[in-house]
Image (cartoon, rainbow, N blue to C red; front, top):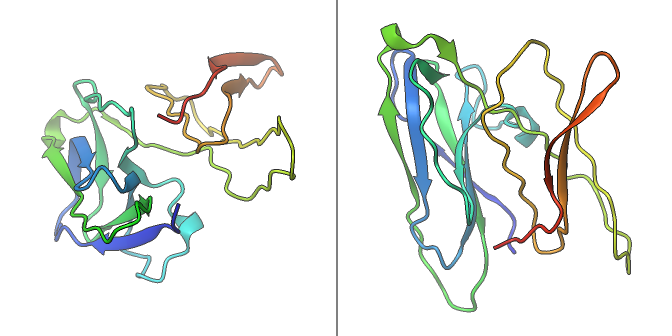
Length: 187
């Protein structure tokens, strides 16, 4: 696998826009491992730090990912002057390749938006699997500051990933399993 490539796209929004649906599509499925599209707000310049994007995910593509439309009255806000950052992860196949991946959007009528939708990530890229380890746990956490409705969970690892488990740690100290994938399959 190659290092991520980042492409900044200015949609030219001169006013805030609400998106009720987005869909990323790979232009060349033989080399596109995944696509993540983040919102780069107007106050950040093009020399952004990657960790500034973590909680600004808008959409993505990975093998097996299904796009589901947002429920009526819900949409994601993109502020005027924001840009989209396409994080592209390519897989080499041994020959020169070209790709023209893209994202389609459906706008929402602002007057029909009752609830804003965000897609935070519980993400951990700072780990090392010890040599010869057959079972190594990697943890990540995301703290919700307010009540929220959870629509989806997208476990994503690469070929060495074996299982995935989402747990909620409640204020009362109790733990609840939201999703357990005991036999994760990269495909």
